[in-house]
Image (tube, rainbow, N blue to C red):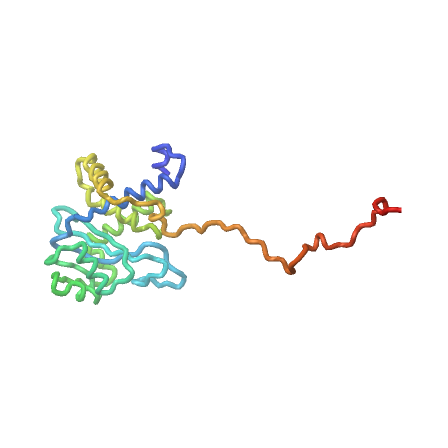
Length: 244
């Protein structure tokens, strides 16, 4: 709505489509992968389903895999985030291969899926600890996950739907990885550069659940064939039409 006001657009759908197209352009297919010591963990976004106890149960929440560079001079380095269906070894391995350079050190919690996901490609460093110490052992990944949730609740007022959460994740990663840039104009230039190089995105490709078209109801067929009942009636008495 802020973009709609600033550009003086008459349609909210037009502003939303423009912003979503720009979010798709924030993902650079030739971006450098994370390297060095990388913290990897999962977080969840959404609300608990009825009867859900929490933990790694999905329910109405979406699982998000988070990887953050730890070897930064101050704080943490770049990050990558991705929505996942589960936390099994094949899923984690695909995430690591797409975002982390082989040979890096992967720091995780004690989940038994990580040894298989990092086998032969990465140096795995598990840190098994109670839940209360998880943020101490993995401070970077927990800080990034917390910043993402706070950004969604603050900037988007918690109104962003889960169907298009992937676009919001792409925007957050783009902003987070360029948070230390001293030239804001260069960040805008990178966004325009990605938009020009990106393939065309149609509006219907951005809609996850399209509204069905309204179909006019078809009148039911007549019960009997032949003349309608409105004509099948006795002849009225009109004496002036009868010849004498």
